[in-house]
Length: 212
Image (cartoon, rainbow, N blue to C red; front, side):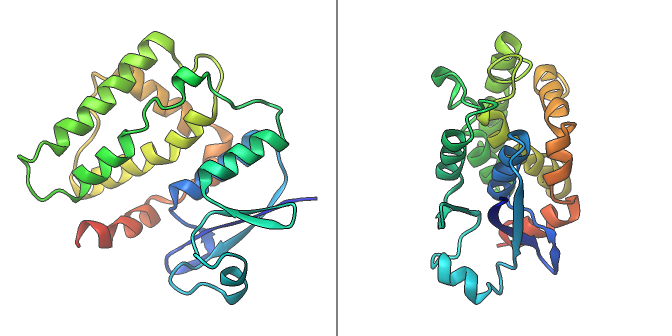
């Protein structure tokens, strides 16, 4: 029996997977654990009635587990790990929060209108810290094996790549070689290829936030 997941549809293309990094994180987990699933793509600007019925907050992703719809990617990933322990994606506790500040720093820099507000440097500091970590422990965050931390980071690094390249003509410095190798590893995985949004949908998703 396939698990049901509701994920974001692309803006203007209701049959195509959209640009939500949290939906992708859950899809990556399902793919890596080889759990069969059925995806419902939700047009977030015109949510279907059945979806609001099972999920009044209207947020994606939600997954149907034992006849209950469960929101929040953190919670969902935890439940999937519990119900489908093989292959284990649990990272060692000391590595569980590696890279966790990158997404917030990226969004701040992306939205920043002031080149002197320190947001670029704050993002660089986070990326350098990840690079240092990977140098010591890589190629993945917990070594040879991919874990939930990598699956949470991969979609966010993809958004960072696409959005900063498009809106700020900015790329991660070449000298962060461990970071670049890590990104290549993640983006070339079959699970990632299968679940990523197209670049134009990622750009369209950030457009209103950048121009706000």
